[in-house]
Length: 528
Image 1 (cartoon, rainbow, N blue to C red):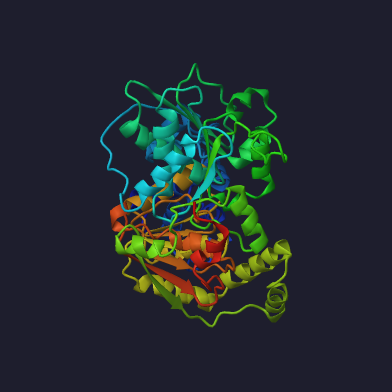
Image 2: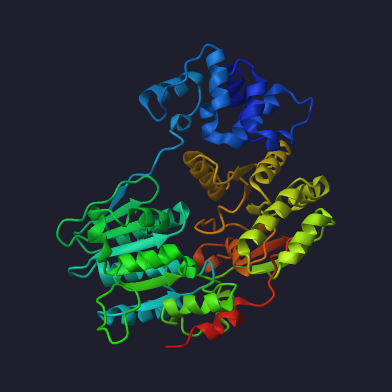
């Protein structure tokens, strides 16, 4: 077990030896991995491994500490909390509030040296964006489509800096829109890096975090370069705020993971930006350039895919998509995927299989997704299948493993079993407290954790370039969903990743490639 012996003993003392409280903190799924006669130290160590710096703030642990005549702080992330944690002998990180928000704004100075864009393909995309933005007014839209690991974010950020934020002008504002907090923060850090290297001499870039509970940002003074990185959910809930009127006229809009861009929330965004399709005969609007980013710029329905393509004027960069993945693989920009199948005899109840078959070609996506979720939950409790997954991970010589599990409890149980076998692992999900989640992700990236078990949350916006095994146990139908999971391991050596990555898909998982996505979306995007 990865937890240190000293912390294990300290946790036991803090809860007055109340193992029942630790079991409650772990939850039923993780407790299934514990042997019935395991010692209290084993339970405490596993609790530390799976809850990380959130352990002392768990309600069950907190109540046990009170029963042991300790006085947990009324608020975490305070001097009182730091003193309490220090008195227990825990690191200061255990005192951080688990709901702590990142600062609303980031101020970045520059520049410093930065490796140039790859001339083999990234420069071509940058030049195409230069021409698009230089058109000056009217409708200017395109999708940047590169395989995951190809550097779409880096190109878009550099284009935003060089073409919009750095030059003198009246519209030195970029609005970057994403689906998840992870994607948002990835963009913030990319702007930090690029501005520090390529920013305007003597000027400071204002980068605003605008998601979750962050307040409405105010306009910058004068023409100061400003980036607002926002979640689509937060934008949709705040469009009516008069204080945001200044943000509706940016110089550039970037839509990350733009295959979502035909949903009502993005239609509302375009309406707010006054960038809807003009009426016949109406003069062109002075709308911002709109750039979409996606490794999979299509939908599963042909009609929806065409709507998506038209939303970006059926313009896609790089222009030559045919054989693009092969070229990036040959150049070492992408890791070479080694697709393997893990055969199991696992199945689900006949009634559930029947529901799945009946809805397979149905247009009722909501009902199908509900059935698929039930399938995943049933597979998650299949003991023989779980034993096969654990044995496979034990036998693997991979250094960093990203494990897409069937459910949140499944992630917790698998991480617990691995920890008990001496394999450093953790589980993250949408339920994991924010500070603990970042702590686990950082430990995985640094190599302190070998296996990161997750359910859905790391399909996009997560960068762990040294991942050399992606294990996909989750049942999916959509090639888009499958490709997003696969893509987490495809960053090549010339992009800071690995030479090869094993993609191990459980045979009872239906998310398998039927056709390369290039062939699916080739007819949707005309070359320009």
